[in-house]
Length: 381
Ligand SMILES: *Cc1c(COP(=O)(O)O)cnc(C)c1O
Image (cartoon, rainbow, N blue to C red; front, side, top):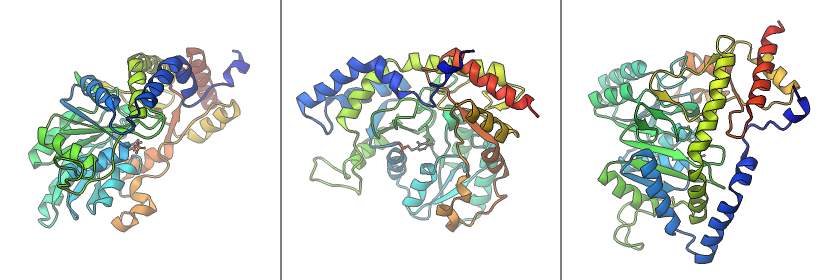
């Protein structure tokens, strides 16, 4: 093992990607500078067509971030103050933040211990209890494709249908994943994603998109994105936001989309290698039959997490903990009145979860070095 060479392992390698795409991206940015249509330029619409095609959705509406994508989706279903939205406490703050931002009430439902995604059975039970309380207006479910692995949308959509609820897929990490023949972002009524640089498909700044097959929702999204516009820019028919994706970001994304499937394949190769080496030693995120992850992260739980982190540090290998604190325990949500012990699975996973590098530019030699390091940490007891 050549240790010197291994010092260059990075958690997300945007530099190698930039080198691979260098000329294409430079030329694409230069074309935008030359035509000067920085807001809603032709690249935005071309990218939307390609995105919709990629995910098999009727419409893709690009926007300013993954957070705004969720916000716009909730606005498009006319979420009202006091309405209830069910979601997972094991996610990035944005998922639940947008619910509260609109004055609605996030109600958390615990996750499955092996996929870390929202538990459809607990979801059904929680909804039944809430529906028993006539004062609660339950409207929507936001499952998250955590670490790139789609939530169990077959079961979730069924639960939603039986209760007459909307389902918004938070696929901020999920772009590229799939469930059977359906692509992530298109696993329910509305899907949202993020183009934050470190996500599976990232741009050179902030960006996001919303996917739907519904003509009415699409019409609303396009309006909400530009200050609730009606027929024209100075005709405003509803309250909206400034939620546009920059033309330059669309141009960058068009280039990155060209190599996305190749990158996804590379992530799959690395993830398969880790699973083969590490399974049985740690508990890798479970891939059930028919599910394909986008591998935004490669994550596992281990009771020996601290020992593994120490050993990785010793060898200069980066790692990350997503997420060290479940959302119901965040100070920002203290007004919801949750306490420790309310969602024991999410709490336990946040105490034992660890993510290791899985980017497309990681060599198998590096993956081997990382695996060996983890295994050696576990042997040294
Ligand atoms: C990153 C992320 C978001 C927010 O996306 P931004 O583009 O950073 O606003 C929302 N939900 C999840 C699960 C995320 O990982």
